[in-house]
Image 1 (cartoon, rainbow, N blue to C red):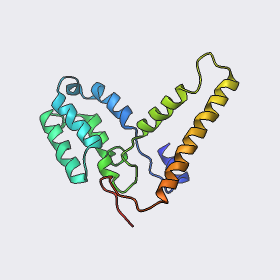
Image 2: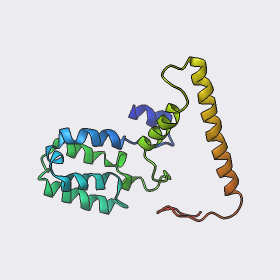
Image 3: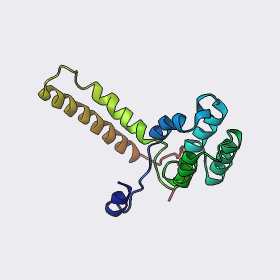
Image 4: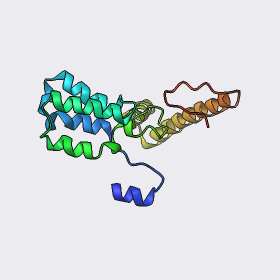
Length: 160
């Protein structure tokens, strides 16, 4: 899949899902199950570091505290760190939203538009209403943006 994305979507960046990595980690790194400090350092590396230097600092601290230098899974994960750590993706505007947050938000919205007993027609009507609500909210936000200058509040935002 990574090769196909690179060839077809040449201007996009393929990233790995942090949720899946987090779910797999305890089975690959045993001390994550009982050492909150080491596990916390791992999560720090995933999404809390502001730069590559900070990432390396916390990664090395985690490896040292957990005696994890021989862990092959972590070695492999480190080799592809640019695909999953937010520290290596600061040049991409994502507003701090992770892919899992987008899907959870969509799932939350979709669960409200129909019931398990709904017919296919009722599902489509509910979906149309939901999409209409989303479009209206986007229209309202677009309108707000045309009404003056925007105050940048997100860390790392830049004006062109």
